[in-house]
Length: 468
Image (tube, rainbow, N blue to C red):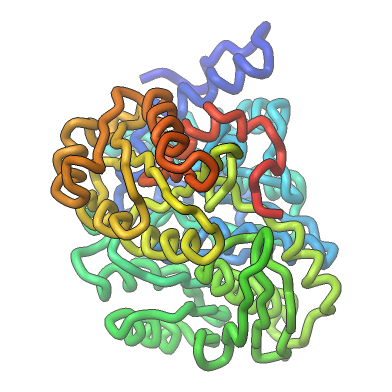
């Protein structure tokens, strides 16, 4: 197996060096194929001097809404004058998006230097694990180690960390969060996390640490007792939506929505959140409560300065989350990839956009629930173009189309050989059906949205379509 320190980066341009490093990391086990152990990540971090212990952590789990919530927390904390790190996944354009300092992805030069510093440790842990009959560090484990090393080196004061999957055995969980956020828990990744909601909730509750503050979104009946038990066993403080925290009021508007949010410390009225959909109002509530808890630093919760909170929310972007990447006709992209995410997406589109007709471009990965995803889109889409992203995990277009025909009927379904063809067909259909009042929605997986954004050039236009 190749030694990561053997990568020859000398003489390469920064673009070439980034691609070379990323290609090496991709040879490792993928992020969705993890082992129930933190030993390798913990060993790597120990050899690096425990970087995950030198900053405060807001740790975020749940099934949907993690990335948007994390981005809101980071923006609020940074607006309060603290230096921040942000770790989210997956990425849309470049792997460097996953590791951000003060709201910006680390630069290519920083990424290359970071890799060169950490690679010898990665190799050492790989070798020890292989000697014991285990695997090398996985793709996701390497990125977690790189992120924590980058945050310590910056140095940041607060890291906002989104789990990759679950919680107990997620590689990010070598860090102890002073604040744990549990977004809504629903069925997803059942083959890895559990076949029922209680089992999945048990995995996600693993990020709640002794004495921490746990900010809990509204949950189903099966999830609540699991989280209650975890909070009790760890002597944590629970802030529950519907009790200690609440979305009091929301009003959709141009470019986002006005919300009034109640926390234990205050009621914050008429905050503008530049993101669409009721679910984003609830994500904002979690972010605000988490920020209050973090800044209280174990003491009594204090209300935050209203203008600072307004500025923090006002600066938020969340690429790939109901993002406008083209106009005339309008093309939206959204990374919803499970039934609960699709339900939130449908509600947000119906509330915020006045389309006369919508044509969908849908690609889904093989470990997802295509019937549930397509069934959730049935009421929203007038026509659908089925395609597949370049991911090896993508359901083949013809196979997915058979499921789609069972949901939409033959007349509403087209099949495209690739994403460029799919978007072209969708745009032509939209223009033919309603010249000015039709839109196109690309959804179903992160990979299909990532590729659509690149095709539309959204990955190169900072802030374009990000609902400011």
